[in-house]
Length: 244
Image 1 (cartoon, rainbow, N blue to C red):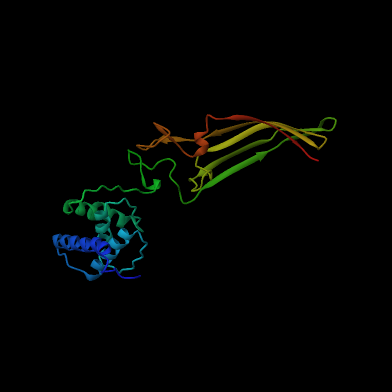
Image 2 (spheres, rainbow, N blue to C red):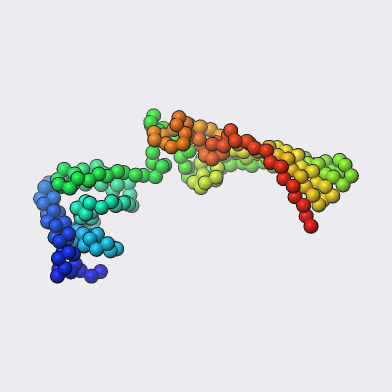
C-alpha cells in the first residue's frame, strides 16, 4: 500500500487532523499512551476515506485499531457500516468507544447497533417463536388409496398428504418450523392412462407467538414460519394432465 502523499495538501489535511485529534483523545484516556502504529493507521484510514479508496490494514493486538478507524470516520461526517467479527467487540464499540468519542469530540454523530434477528428477544425475555435452531426434524406422510376400473378404462384415487415440523426451526426459507405444516385431500381420476384430472383442497397451519416490538406485518402476533402465516389461506386446485 502506498504511503500518504505529504506533498498533496488535500490528502494530508484529513490525515493530519485525524492524528491530532487522536493524540488529544489518547491524552484524555486513563493510562493513555501514544502508539506509532495507531497514529499511522489513523492517517491511512483518513487518507483512504478522503480519497474514496479501498484500504486493508493488518495490525496486532494492542494497536488501538478501534479508535484508529473510528476517529477519522467520525471526522469525515460520512455514513458507514462497521462489521465486527465478535459480539464482544460490537459491545465494546457501542458501550465504550463510541460513547467516549461522543463526550470528547466536537463533531456530533449518531450510531445504532444492529444484530441478526436471532439475537433479539421478546419483551418478556423469551425467545421469539420463529428463532432458528441448530437442528430441524419433520415428518411427511403420503397415502393414496386407489380403486381400479371404477368405470371402464377409469381409475379413481384419493391422494392424502400431511407434513409437519416436529422439532426446531430450519434456517432456510420454507425449510420447516416446529408445529407448522400443511395437508391436502382430494380425488384424482385417470382416464385410459392418458388423461388425469385432480381436484384437491390444500390447507396450512402453525403456531403464533407474541410479536417483537417494531415487528412489521403482524401488529400483535408473530407466525412461526410461512406455513403458519398461511393458516387462513387454504385453497382448492383443479388440474388436468395428459400424455402424448
